[in-house]
Amino acid sequence: MTSQDAITAAVDRLAVAQETRVPCAPVRDLIGTDDLSAAYAVQQGLVQRRLSGGVTVVGRKIGATSEAVQRQLGVDQPDFGYLLSDMDVSHGADGMPISMRTLVQPRVEAEVAFVLAHDIDLDEDDITLDAVRAAVDVALPALEIVDSRIADWKIGFTDTVADNASSGLFVVGRDGRKLDPSTGSGQAELEPRDVVMSLTINGEELSSGTGAACLGDPLEALRWLAVQARRFGDPLRAGHLILSGALGPFVPFAPGDRVTASISGFEPLVVEFEE
View 1 (cartoon, rainbow, N blue to C red):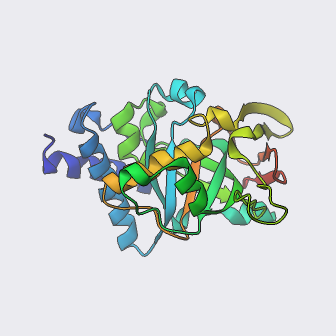
View 2 (cartoon, one colour):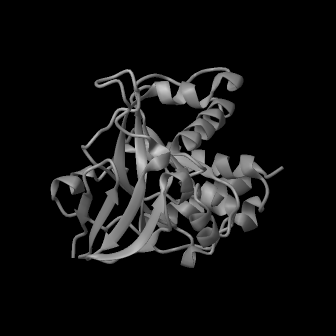
View 3 (cartoon, rainbow, N blue to C red):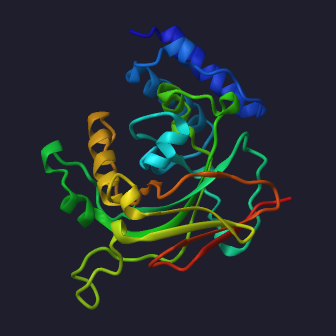
């Protein structure tokens, strides 16, 4: 069992790296490589510090859902983190440049996001694909700007979990699509597993993938998250935004870059980063 002192030390190390924008050493020397409870305890400590500063929880993110990203990170399973109000830079979808002043070692990835119409507070056996689909209000195109406070992205699984699943910022488009086939024409407006994604930077394609790359189906990623959230005693709630995970490899970018995520079924999501 990892001691509370070690958990607190890991929180302090990551918090200082975030505040100073100076990458730190991995925290696995403090919490080990296998103690997921300790890693999520560090994550909670970091989140609670930020909440005490006045931000709010607006949703969750699922990380390492595609094999491409797992290979990039050297992990073999997904994880999750919290989306906070100060991470939302969706004004970038409206043509306003996005500041990089809070970022340390950013990368960008494209994915499908979900906004929940209903809580997913069910017994674990009742959290099915049909149940999570029914809980979704709309699906949206999204860019996640992932980041790591750990030097050179040299992370193990407990490192990325502790570091709020290597989260940074996020952009969500305004172009929502319904999943419920009972609406409108009687057909779903979008089937998440069938989408095709292309991500370009300054016109050059640097990442591509499909909905099926995200745990086989972004809705399966949502189901996985709902189960984990239930186990951790913090179920998913109506109104929450869920970033379901990358559809292809994440890629680095630089100030001044123009990033375009084209996900079939949605209008392209285009953002620019400040010089």
